[in-house]
Amino acid sequence: MGIANTSSAAALISALTCFSVEQCVGRGTGITDEQLAKKITLIEHALQRVNLSDSGPETLNQAEVTELLSQLGGFEIVQMVAAILTAAANTIPVVIDGFIVSVAALVALRLDKNVANYLIFPHVSEEKAHQLLLSELLAAQTLTKQGGQPLLKLGLCLGKGTGAALAYPLIKAAASFYNHMASFESAGVTV
Image 1 (cartoon, one colour):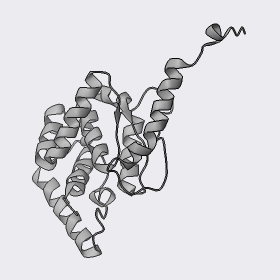
Image 2 (cartoon, rainbow, N blue to C red):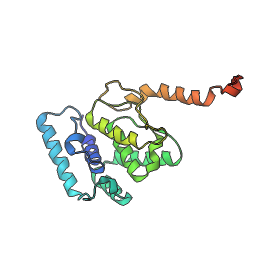
Image 3 (cartoon, one colour):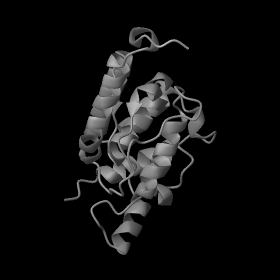
Image 4 (cartoon, rainbow, N blue to C red):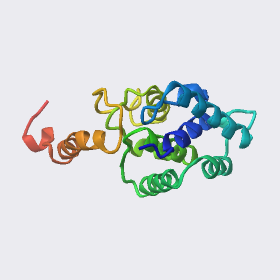
């Protein structure tokens, strides 16, 4: 179909990380080599237009991140960023499925570091940019010593909720185990 949200997302990830445009751009809906080259050029022009700070993406403040979002993001990305920020503020976990949603999670993370531990990643895509993006997002998690990891690796090249639908039974089971499993004390086990 091609609605250009992978272009917007690629521009945002490049602006918010140290990854080059070439590392962030994929074929989206299956574009040709010529179209891919044009997509890369257009995203590079967009990044030049927003005049990124010379000191690097890690030093961007909230106002600069918000400005990048307004210049490079589509309405759907803006809405997802707001939903992720609101969920985290209310201690509600969010399932982050696919490249576009992962970019929204990165923007939310740049706006509020506390978002990281509320993100659940159902799968890692075969798309190189998604793998790079997940490495950034997972490294920000502090709940475990080594950070988090995606629940599944199935070779999927799409989001659209497919990974979330597959991972939901795992998430539900984990919550049930955590909330209902007997403790040593309640089971009468002594150590």
